[in-house]
Image 1 (spheres, rainbow, N blue to C red):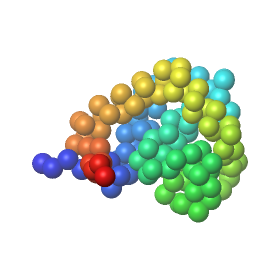
Image 2: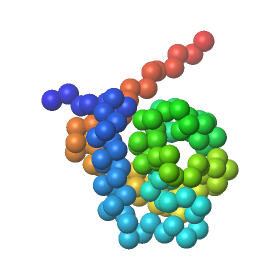
Image 3: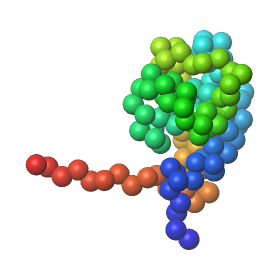
Image 4: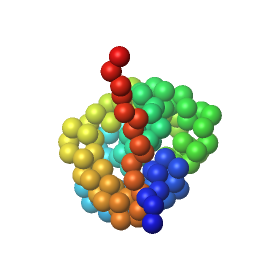
Length: 126
């Protein structure tokens, strides 16, 4: 069986991300964050998968990209994300060790589901 690409199988990635967040529910402390920790973790993942380079760009993309909104469980009833607060939350989540725990578990689940990381083109020197 050929491994499936993470980017092309976004529905499965979302299921795995949601499941991983649920597994970590006991350690997800929303107190120091402006946004729910699950949203922050999935925002970091979404940025990595789709080469979104900043919280500001992600927040702008959420206005038009229904797939991004779906992935983050954001709908028209949810308040808009504030780029500065999201950026700060991302840094906190990664610094306190929750990010690495989330991504380690997610990677394990993705491999078990037959997903692989997208191929990164090799850079050639000029």
